Length: 305
Image 1: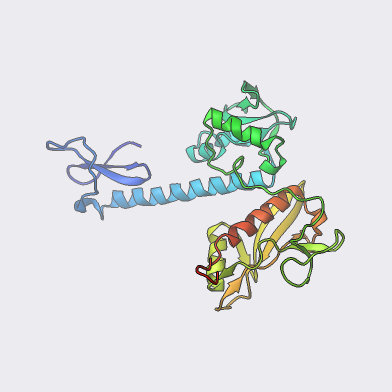
Image 2: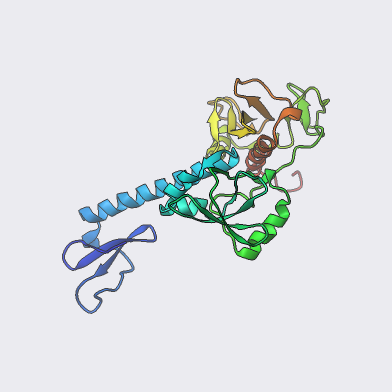
């Protein structure tokens, strides 16, 4: 960003997201100062740059969130849209190096560039640079990628770094049948078993104790999950079907010790979904949420732990 005049003898600019100053006179002319001079701290131009920096941070966060939504839901994204936003540094940082697929799901590769005409430059999984111009592309959820371990190894060889967590995202594969952590709705306690037909909840990550409900819900919101009523939730689209995963976090206004509850899924109409009917992305994202909440639990120490 260009340096702007600010007061007598100084110029300012945004450098790595913060307002920096340099002197225009004397022996230190042209040298960036380590701290902002006191004379500039209330200057209108400094305030304007601070507000611009805050907007850029919000914009970058919004771009990452939108791309993450596309990936989690495996939504088809118009190639023309990617080409249009690519010149924007925040959008480009969010999209670059993600695995994308064209009209043929087997044509997967790491996105490296997009032209104004809508042509995408990708490095495919054979290491070849290819150019594609499909009408739409998909940013597949990693649980849908075959040979994910091989993709991760290849990405390491290329030095791939993704701003949106995709190939290194924690994933869970839904078992063919509910295991010991599955239970029918209302079944008693962790470890309750259920038949394939009546299993509606998973209790693998139930029972994580937090000092208060507030500390548990604060962890949920800090991880990007929505808290509504007594549940932390995340919504995805799995094979075109809207599904919501939910973990019980306690009654609102409960001020005492609180434990994580069971993980369940529901459809767009709020009906409970049997475990055997939960799609692969919804399963993986629900388990990821439950595991992340449980990881923040209070760990007992000492002989009685």
